[in-house]
Structure formats: C-alpha cells, structure tokens
Amino acid sequence: MDLCRQYQIPHSQLRGHGDGTWTDLDRRKALAHEAYLKQICPSCGTRADEWDEQAGGAEDAYTAITHRCIGCQLIADKQKTVPEGADGNGVKVLLIPTSVHAALELTRPAH
Image (cartoon, rainbow, N blue to C red):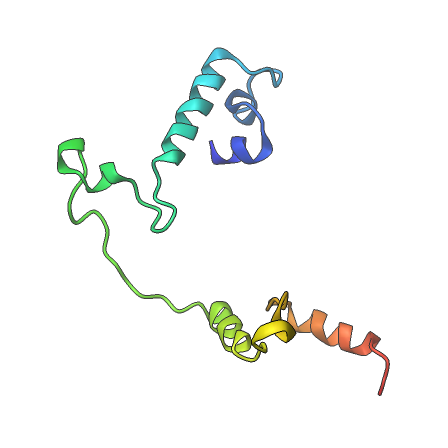
C-alpha cells in the first residue's frame, strides 16, 4: 500500500488487475492504510497496539539498539563549523557524492 500511496494508484492496478479505476475495495484499502499510518508514532515509528498486550501486542515488542550513521555523523560534525547568528542563517549542511564534489571543484574559477 505504501507504493500505491507514493504513486497514487489503486491497489488493484499495482497487482496488475483492472484498468486503473479505483474500485470500492481499492478505496477501502487506501482508507484503512491511511488510518494505520495515523497510528504510527512520528518519533519512534511504532504503534500503541504493538505494545498493548490486550490488543495482541507485547511489552517487549521492540528492543532499543544503537546505530551510527556515518552520513549523519559527517553532517553533525560539519554543522559545528556553521557560524552562529546572521552569518549562519540559512546555511544548510548537505551530503553530496565525493565524485560530484570533485567535478564541482573543477568548474570553479581558480583564485
């Protein structure tokens, strides 16, 4: 259903059935999926029912682990070099492939 949502197509079309017209079943599936997505915590990505034993969940449904993303680490390190105040307003730190950066450097005029 996530692909259907992304491409804004009915589920029946994704499955190779129908002509792209939204059927009643397609609409019910899409509405159910939207209701499901609204239950997901934007911070941790879980749903309350997954933790609630009375709803079929479990108190230990998930285990917290740590994970280091090197890209996020590079962004955080570079962000520390952005000036405070007006000089830093609007400055964004982005990741671009090293090959693209090298090509961009070649197009810059020499000083």
